[in-house]
Image (cartoon, rainbow, N blue to C red; front, side, top):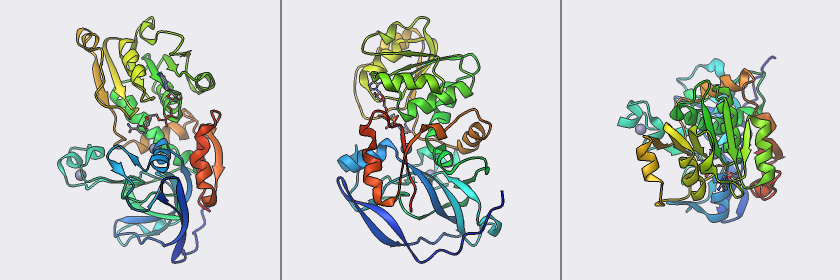
Amino acid sequence: MTTTTPSPPASTMRASVMTGVRTLEIEDRAIPSPGPYEVLVEVAAVGVCGSDVHYYRDGRIGDFVVAEPMVLGHELSGRIAAVGENVDQSRVGQRVAVEPQHPCRRCTQCTAGRYNLCPDMKFYATPPIDGAFCRYVTIDANFAHAVPDSMSDDAAALLEPLSVAVATMRKAGVVPGSSILIAGAGPIGIITAQAARAFGAARIVVSDPVQERRERALTFGATEIIDPIAHDVAALDPQVDVFVDASGAIPAVQSGIRAVGPAGRVVLVGVGNDNYPLPVSHIQNLEITVTGVFRYTDTWPAAIHLVASGSVDLDRLVTGRYDLDHVAEALESDTDPASLKSIVVPR
Ligand SMILES: NC(=O)c1ccc[n+]([C@@H]2O[C@H](COP(=O)([O-])OP(=O)(O)OC[C@H]3O[C@@H](n4cnc5c(N)ncnc54)[C@H](O)[C@@H]3O)[C@@H](O)[C@H]2O)c1
Ligand SMILES: [Zn+2]
Ligand SMILES: [Zn+2]
């Protein structure tokens, strides 16, 4: 496929701006200029994430409060429209997936290669940093990851949640033959199930109280499903090597940990609760490692490979597509249990 160089952008762009709880306004904003090591990306597709929905409905997630007008959206793909002075000019026109974060690159965590833990991180659509429900964004050139033409704009955008799953597989030490329990069959749980299969897991159990969500997991890599209301997840037999919580539900974490066998690993991905009881003697007596995942470091190359090689299918997650004038509908689409992933195409 030949790539065409986009015409130089105008000086302003349309953006969907969250100006209050459940309030969005279309604004004309200045198109940002790329810094010396940045690129300007013309946005092609943006996935709607649960965190966007939380900010929209509640105006906050924990200590992160939307105090000023902010653009939501952090799962995105697009095409490089312009480059900063120190970036290879031949990249203009390249299709890219954006890794939506700006670590400082100088602190101890960045230097140690754990830039997701950078205390000075600027992350898209996390107050006060604007996200991508708009026509153009800027990003460091090396966080604009080139994608093959075989990959759709939607799939390239959804490399972001796949990156969470790749980080989770690495933390969980999933290898060929592993057994894994995943709590939650929302987008993250579904993508985690696909990633687990791609990493070679032999047994993939997915729990979700919603029957429709649970059954859908079977088409995305789950080898077994379990209703956590009707059945005791902790009694899974045999026990699993790995438990991933992708629900954020306290009972899911408590029962999931007890489903893990000796020397197993637990990775907490779901968020939303602090300070609740855990089955400590089970963790202690079986030497289970319990850890969390906070986004990702260096996952796009692996995620691109998983999709380009056909091991993970992200296109099949997409259940709705909306333009900039219908971002509110995109953010409310999760009220339909049949909805899995909505995409905003910023036209
Ligand atoms: N740590 C990170 O870096 C990171 C990144 C992205 C998302 N997240 C978090 O991951 C979680 C999942 O994201 P999502 O978009 O898929 O959310 P989601 O709300 O769409 O899905 C959660 C699912 O969990 C199910 N659930 C509820 N109670 C359960 C129980 N007791 N047992 C099993 N399943 C249960 C729900 O029915 C739902 O299907 C959220 O908490 C999100 O904030 C974390
Ligand atoms: Zn997200
Ligand atoms: Zn840093």
